[in-house]
Length: 215
Ligand code: ADP
Ligand code: AMP
Image (cartoon, rainbow, N blue to C red; front, top):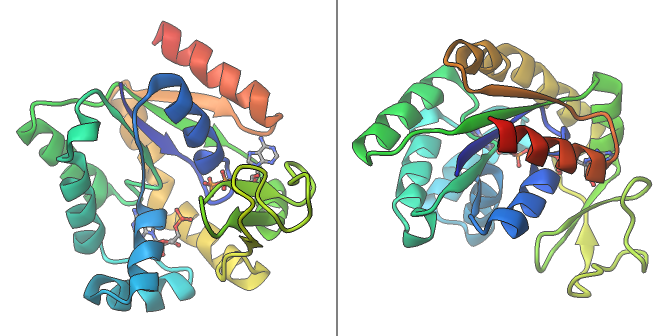
């Protein structure tokens, strides 16, 4: 199954992808995660990406398109993949289409998670992530059993630099200008599945699974 999870920052793409990985046994491809690793390692790509990420802006299309193409060629993507946070512009969506065509693949569905702006800000300001395994938590909606520690691996939880209110507002504006046109883009191609992302994590998950079954 070849899927895209589309939605604004904080919609629940990472949370839902992690559960879909378990269920379908296909990898999650998060461009945000890959870029954060590159920044941490200080690779040339990371150095280039950092200033855009710190400002809440998008990293240039050619950089992200290149890393996704390389990732999709890996062996673990042969039975499918879940793209999380990519594509984010029409240029990226067109490039993805070209890459998949070259590989003889196609998208099966684009899941669009719909969440109101106030809820997005609340989710992002309360988001915490495990430094070791990357599992996401929320201080109020999905808290760890022991404060500051990951349930899964005991790793330390941290707050992303761009999850501060000022950068969050910028990222939401960037989403609305540059990424939201993809909703119509994929609707017109008959691939869009709209999901009400305002409900509990487990309810959203079962809705996605039910929608994929009938798509
Ligand atoms: P995205 O990957 O779309 O940026 P995340 O999956 O990281 O979003 O979710 C953002 C924050 O909101 C996390 O702290 C997560 O625990 C929380 N969250 C995700 N889905 C829900 C939900 N349905 N209800 C409440 N909180 C949620
Ligand atoms: P995310 O983890 O998806 O919230 O992404 C964090 C940051 O990484 C974004 O604010 C962008 O700066 C950058 N980024 C992630 N994915 C993309 C993408 N597909 N295109 C451009 N920039 C991206």
